[in-house]
Image (cartoon, rainbow, N blue to C red):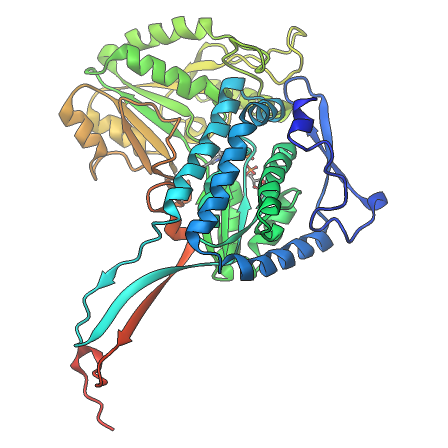
Amino acid sequence: MSFLSRLGIESVNNGTWIGSKSYSWEHREYLKSISPIDDSVIAEVSWSSDDQYEEVVEEAQKAFIAWRKVPAPQRGEIVRQIGESLRKHKEDLGRLVSLENGKILQEGMGEVQEMIDICDFAVGQSRQLYGFTMQSEREEHRLYDQYHPLGPVGIISAFNFPVAVWSWNTMIAAVCGNVMIWKPSEKTPLTAIACQKIASDVMKKNDMPEGVFNLVIGDASIGDRMAGDTRLPLISATGSTRMGKSVGPRVASRLGKSILELGGNNAIIVTEHADIEMAVRATVFGAVGTAGQRCTSTRRLIVQSSVFEKVKKRLLEVYEKITIGNPLEEGTLVGPLIDRQAVENMQNALSELKKQGGEILYGGEPLDSGEYPSANYVRPALCQAKNEYPIVQEETFAPILYLIPYETLDDAIAMHNGVDQGLSSAIFTLNLREAERFLSATGSDCGIANVNIGTSGAEIGGAFGGEKETGGGRESGSDAWKSYMRRQTNTINWSTEMPLAQGIRFDV
Ligand code: NAD
């Protein structure tokens, strides 16, 4: 039995899914799921038509009526079972993530582990949807706040974390009592179908409405439709800043809520007090891990001039040893980029860098000589640059690391914050003053700021997201759950009087 059939996705064309009733098989349009490993077509997946979208939203609305009444800890129990199923399918789903997205198997498995972790977190959260109790200024009055679910939540996700981003949103939103409509990236529809299968099977086993977890397949046009749909009170959108600049105003124009998780341009500062070996290890994972296709990938390394040459030399030594190849093979550290367009974008960025005065110190070339199974492979690039170069100011979604020297910590922080994005950041130093300065209000302006840990590889327990053009949204742990609920303030008068707040007298 192949891992695809163990995931149950070989047989999805059976007409039993919500939204698959109303249209004929002959008129389906198909989207190809293409593996960047060798450009082979893994599967053809049908697009969701406008009618199907309508059907899915209607089913979701119906399911919400029932799901919001299920006590939160029981909703947590459903999420626990999804977590169990993910544990069972970890190997297969992790492999499918690698196959469809091109990340190495270790990271494919890691992504599924992240899903399991957020399920566990959400189970605990389901008993902790706390509001405050406040002291009323009036006698014999009680004042408190509580949280209620919002309704159908639209989730738009990117290709680079094809399944984890869904789970961060979905598992928390589900225990909060919402129903979810997910539009995955058009580049990774198959992993989405596998997740949908897992969630649907658990719902069926528990006799729960299937319309709690929903999937629609398509490109930006269906995402745009969701952004404008007043039946979806919250849109959580993960992807490029370009996408966020379209989705954000569209949702805002109907006064809906949005969680925007957009691009990053993440930097590490390495001071003269750093443990250089630790800094190099973290930088290499941050810059070349997932082939530089993480929102938290390290793109800029801002290094104190007295240790600049040492850091550069160590990085050059390590970059030469990086193994590039089939991500499903043991020992590979860097797999392919998502597609040929991504390779071209990287090449364009590198030629811009040279035009703007920068230098490529190592790598950067496409590996399209025939030795690799597709033309999507590149050698990670190590470059020297200035922070103000326009190309350094942009997020290029590829393994390019810009080395930038600095003199004073003030200069380093100014450069660090001198970009439009504000997702993840780090400082490597063993000096307490430097570390505290970086974490203070006058330090990093990012949503994530680390000391002696790189920019990528966040744990699910913290709130995840960033500032400025990263969109300001927060997902996953801490109190991010509050974005998926509406807060209600309640005042109960158990006295026999009718006193007004602020002591106002209004005698009738
Ligand atoms: P993308 O913006 O091209 O697409 C992301 C999703 O948005 C896809 O599902 C796409 O179909 C949809 N979409 C695109 N334009 C839209 C529009 N105008 N209206 C509605 N939907 C639209 O991004 P990508 O190439 O898939 O992913 C890479 C980007 O995502 C990078 O910029 C990366 O930094 C970012 N990202 C951010 C986070 C985060 O948490 N901050 C996490 C992962 C990825």
